[in-house]
Image (cartoon, rainbow, N blue to C red; front, side, top):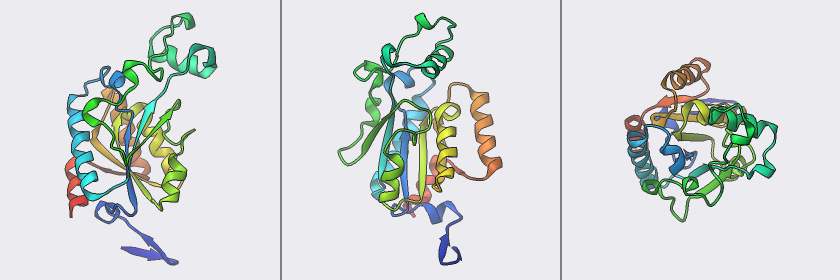
Length: 211
């Protein structure tokens, strides 16, 4: 491991795959979201990631996307909902992920444990408006492994936000689902181009964490 001015500079996944310095984020693996995409393989891969992370004692946080009731939706909320629901009529918008709706819950295959947190958000970045950043900072976490849905919608903004906060993002690519394959590929290519993130797969992450 390289050092500079008294700072350790982990470079490889093996160096980062330490529960003392890295946490796991399971992004928006909700029933209503999983139903919208080809999620069977992603659910299975996230299960594998969770199993190895839990066995290693890694801190784990889930997010859920929360819809606001129409009375509290503003201009941006309507614009986003209209785009997602493919309508140009704001009166046709339905809040899909209200707190107690069936689609809001984490898919049962990935039920969070009592020692794992679930943060609700109304944004794409998992950091905006949630306790994620302060939780990681308070635990001395320096890197965040990310899996879930969807790569091109919320995971890419979360990766960028993490880097801006000085948290190294680790993207477990084959445990990240998508709504549009081409858009997801562009997101991944952009992450590789900018170089902020470490991009790996389930096998690589599991091997590094188990070592």
